[in-house]
Amino acid sequence: DAMVIQNPRYQVTQFGKPVTLSCSQTLNHNVMYWYQQKSSQAPKLLFHYYDKDFNNEADTPDNFQSRRPNTSFCFLDIRSPGLGDAAMYLCATSRGDRDTQYFGPGTRLLVL
Amino acid sequence: LAKTTQPISMDSYEGQEVNITCSHNNIATNDYITWYQQFPSQGPRFIIQGYKTKVTNEVASLFIPADRKSSTLSLPRVSLSDTAVYYCLLRREDTGRRALTFGSGTRLQVQP
Image 1 (tube, helix red, strand yellow):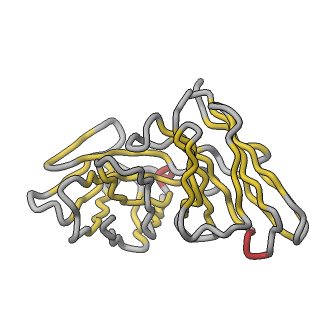
Image 2 (cartoon, rainbow over the protein chains, first blue to last red):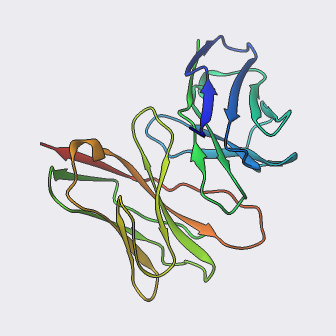
Image 3 (cartoon, chains in turn yellow, orange):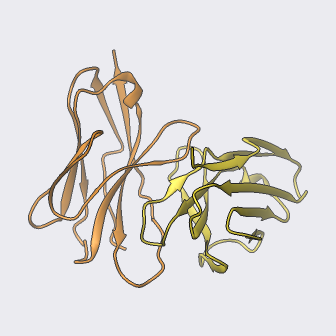
């Protein structure tokens, strides 16, 4: 089945140690998104790619970066994780930027 | 995008119909009303979307009055597995690249 895959499901890192979360999709969608969701809060968009065009949200910290080497893969890099970056990170895709978004299961990040 | 307002939580029993109302007083002409469902430790999942009047699919119905300032998601005969957070969002149909902005959501608890 076509789907959005996130690995790993759980990631533990140390304060200040760079970490990379990965997302892949078999839907061949043009748009890929990264959301941050903290406990009991709604998902918050960090940035998204429309093909290779990167779109950063105004309030996304510089500590968060993203790469999309090809259509299928997108990575979230956190350069120096702080305790406040502990959250669920959700990847989503859509065919176009006005189409339904399909979410992956998320990666839960723990910062020690 | 206009802001949406939903009840923070609702309780129901198995077999009952649940109606979750969302207020969006400042909805724009080219906004579509979209609902997502999120189970614990999973990504949100698209449920239904509409512009006006009534939309029905295999999961839910969406009722939108003529002024479009509110909408009601109706879940017929809920079961325990419908316990989740339900998000009402407005998705703008225009040329701008704008992803989804999630509101606070309604936490539905279904009891036996």
